[in-house]
Every structure is written in C-alpha cells, then in structure tokens.
Image 1 (tube, rainbow, N blue to C red):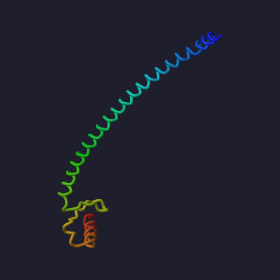
Image 2 (image 1 turned 180 degrees about the horizontal axis):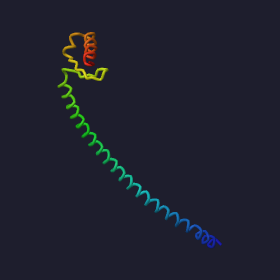
Image 3 (image 1 turned 180 degrees about the vertical axis):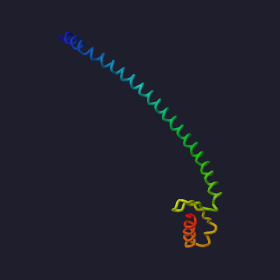
Image 4 (image 1 turned 60 degrees about the horizontal axis):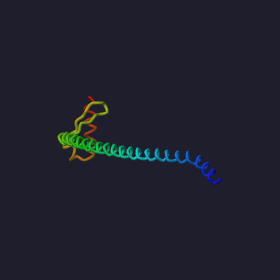
Length: 119
C-alpha cells in the first residue's frame, strides 16, 4: 500500500518539480541578462556624462573668449556712453566731461543733450 501511495505521490509531484526546475532556470537566465543590461546602461551613462563634461568645458572656453572680446569692446569705448533720447535720436555723452560736475551736472547735461538732439 505504501508503494502504491509513493508511486501516486511521485506521479503528482514529478511534473511540479520539473516545472519548478524549468522556472528556476529561466529565472537565472533572466537575472544574467538583467546584469548585462545593467552594465551596458551604466557604461552608456558614463559615456554620456563624460561627453557632456567635454561639451560644457568647450562651451565655457568659448564663452570666456566671447567675454574677453566683449571686455575689449567695452574697454575701448570707456570714454563715452551712447544713449537714446526720448525723441528717438541717439545722443553721445562724454563721461570724462560729466564726471567732475557730479550727479546734478550729469542730469543737466542729459537734459540739455536731449533738447539739443531733438531739433
């Protein structure tokens, strides 16, 4: 009776054990693939960040060059300010001439420049 019971139990348990081993094998293969994908994604992200760092560095150098150029332009026109009067005419105000007169003198020079350039 025990042998018959064991055979019956084995006939039920056998397919379950085989299915379990098959699922376990699939799970292990999937885990190996997932590790490979993780390594590939990590390498891709590392490459992207290195490339981004190079682009940022190049743009910083380019910006520094533009800044030097702008500074040269600003230094070369440091003697004057070019403004726009309310009438729409450009007016040229010499900072050197206005500096000794103070803020009241600047306001007076601006108002006289606006009225003189309007006509």
